[in-house]
Amino acid sequence: MTDEEPVEETEVEEEVDEVVERPQGKGYKCVNCETEVEIDPVDDKIICPKCSHRVLLKKRSEDPDTVKAI
Image (cartoon, rainbow, N blue to C red; front, side, top):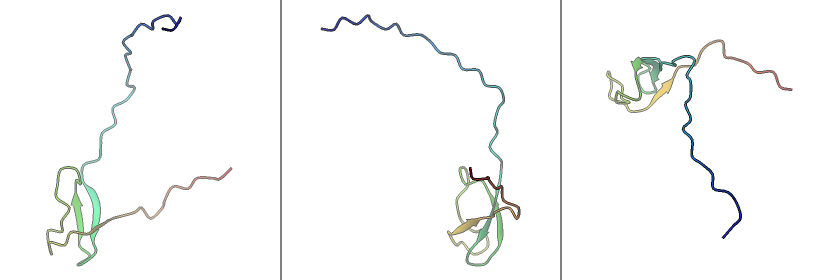
């Protein structure tokens, strides 16, 4: 046995300042036929509707964010 006092459990309420919505439809490009595909990877199958290829690349922005190293 230890001489420590028991710790009481308390309920923790978290406040959410803003609701973050996940974007609907992401830009992808088929590596086989290079068709641009708009899908939601959580809800939709990852497959090209034109050629049925299963490898799609996520499109990247032309102006990526940069972080200054310290």
